[in-house]
Image (cartoon, rainbow, N blue to C red; front, side, top):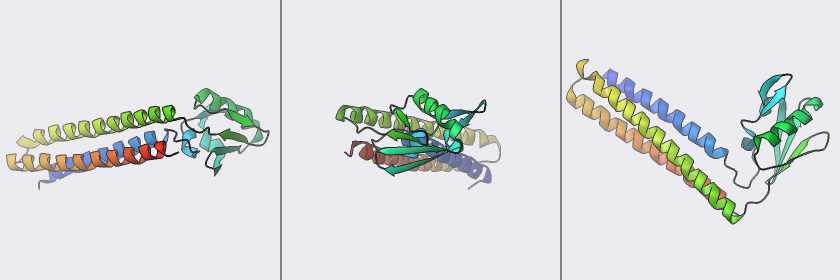
Amino acid sequence: MNDLINKQLQDAQAAMDRAILHCESELTKIRAGKASAGMLDGIMVDYYGSATALSQVASINTPDARTLIVQPWEKSLLVPIERAIMEANIGINPQNDGIVIRLMVPPLTEERRKDLVKKVKEEAERGRVTVRNIRKDANEKIKKLKGESVSDDEIKTGEAEVQKITDAYIIKVDKHAEVKEKDVMTV
């Protein structure tokens, strides 16, 4: 196959890899009733006047399935961390004991589980749409190669390869969503 087409296929595959990683990270943020350090990803703490990721100023542990323990590197950060967690509105009230912050993850109700499954499906659909958009862009770039010593047959072959890659990545998104749905629905 033509080198120009191969380059487009590699670019499309790299973009789809990034889309899958993003989809995975978004699915991780959906709470499944089990404590995980990923629930606190994206929470920023005021650290001497600059917004710093919580994971950069404290250790986060999960001693059991329902508890998160946040232990700041510096005691002076307890209150700012507690405030940041409350402002993040993750549905958990932090308990500050002067040494660590405990987060007790409440068990999920059936209704809440169904809502979370909807969120999982929405996130999976976003992932599929992103992969399809990458396919569309790759196909357009391949079609533009027509004038650059690339034959119609090579273009058709390239488009077929893009479709194969797209199908494989859509299956990956579906598998991630399926695993997360099971996780959410497991009591």
